[in-house]
Image (cartoon, rainbow, N blue to C red; front, top):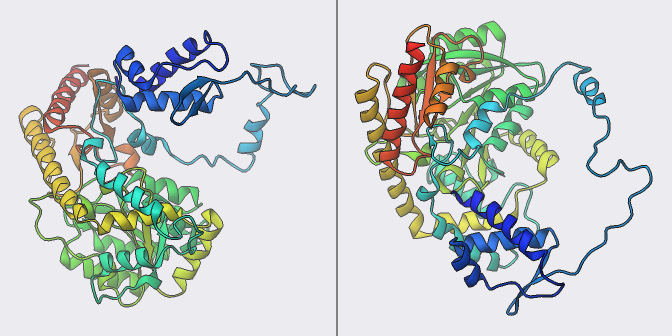
Length: 485
């Protein structure tokens, strides 16, 4: 049973037990509950917190946990619907559709965020497994951050100067083209991407994207009212000949790309094409949004990484985004959006309207984390663990499903599998789930009709190399079942 279901189950048990206690009666101690229900102290603490939030118990430090006094809610107004009934919600169909459907295509993102059922091998996860995250470092950083002078004061809307300076050096290098004034602190990478798409071009305008690409880019662009135009990718990154043609045909002023360990193909933009992308965009009078999401997910056997495009851009063509979230924790929603010139002011204005600023304690914790000597050690450990999971996944694919694996680079956390023509990738993903493994069909990664069926596997979310291999074994069973059908 996972932690979340354990907390829910224990809370249900304690909720029934509390009803038998008179008001003010003390509940058994946490130690007694741990022994009685065979759960962890953390599970007990969280279950008690659930009951306290419901007003069923009160916690008195040093004394214990007690049943709360009964609380009579105020009488409902006469116009309120009877308990357990909702009003007539059918009017919302008209209101939400009067000017056309506008629901963002969030399903592919939800697939990477949902917690899988117990026993299911997760080969879709967008974040490293909890065992790969630096929880002790984070806890210590949060504790120190809370004691910093002014930690609970309102921060500058752009973000803390020290954190912005760290990101500027991290992206552009010491003495590089960026300084703290070029950086905005954002609530993670997806927030930075959304702000960039809403700021740099008007609704209805075309935006060029790689094909295939990260579904979050497609969802954010469409939610901003932009017209998405795909530009194909090969093993060396975006096809610059087709990029130039797309700019000419559409007069677009924005191109979104992932030059490093592109999602989902894993491609790294070649040195020749890096220069071409900047030249083409500069000639078109367009911005390049560089989503540098995977730079902290480099494997321990990777070759030297190319510099970010932003580090080689003197003219403010590149708007760069980067986040600490993937390498640290899904809950550390701290990222950076880097731009120069008037574009930065536009981005700043959009972010202020959207969210005012990022929580100062969270920014202080991020500063404490990256300054800790343990952060560099964590990144080395993470790189080694990702290498081992990648090695196990690739070995299993070559053993179980030879011929599906294309080119890959040692970095990032995903593999892009080319399925035989005519394969129903949706049916295969459904069969895989029945076999106990989550995989992602390729269709949501394309802005237009896909040229072939694909699957994307993510090996970062599994808890061990052995489980990654087991996931591939289950996928083979599903593949054989689908082919036989």
